[in-house]
Length: 317
Image (cartoon, rainbow, N blue to C red; front, side, top):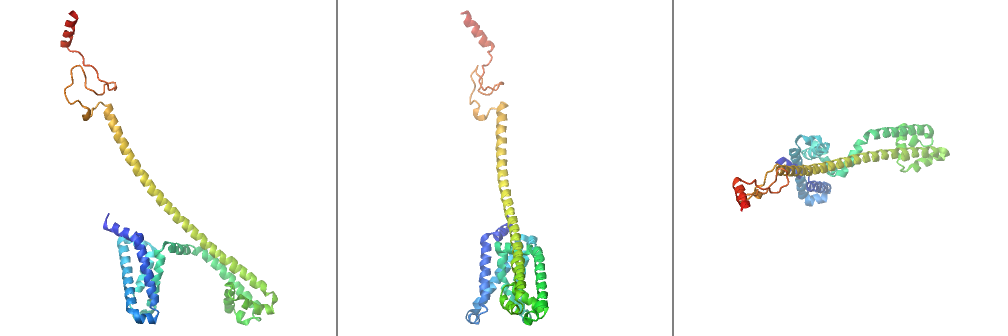
């Protein structure tokens, strides 16, 4: 394993992620404490020191990731997000950069890039933008239509709410949020008792239909993204199991090939050195070993001329 692989293993480890999350939380708390004049008067040096240490850790983290992933580092959009957030923290404290310095609290948003569940939610929101645009367009159309109708019908009854299209748009948005809509509807209904039909219909269409459509699109997109992540995890698990099974099969094939080689050697008549006789074999008995028929039994040695003469002399006697 090379040094780059070891660094990547450290960067991808869970303890490293937990450490960065802890630094982000501590840094966010420190940025909040900077807003208190009393705390800054007593512990300002300590708070600034913690802030500088956190910035140094973030810079080292980005450098280490860049070394571990090389060009692949820039293919992840979350890495670009981290670069922007850390870059804002490195802006000098000059007068012209006061606004950017106020954006240092964006470092707390790095929790999104470190916590997988938060990344999943943000990814679902971004993936749902095409579907959300259509529903938002529908919502704006209903809002504009209600504002124009309100001006035409209720301008005389409530000029402060429906005197112009701009004021009517704000009034219709307020009614859509269901916040104080009765205070808007009561003066109008005192003049036009049937105005409740307009307000109830508008609330049903906007608050209970269109907004629920927005939630449905978000939930559907999150389910699709979650299913895709689970499918990827299942594919990775199946690939790991497949590699394990194939490795075991390769071992079994090697052992089977070795056993077949030993069997072929035995069938060909080769006698292992351990089974070979240690001394001379007595006359008339063949050494133990496979026969041409493969039965493995010893066979008698053909009699010589000397043996034949001895047998003939014995018979004459």
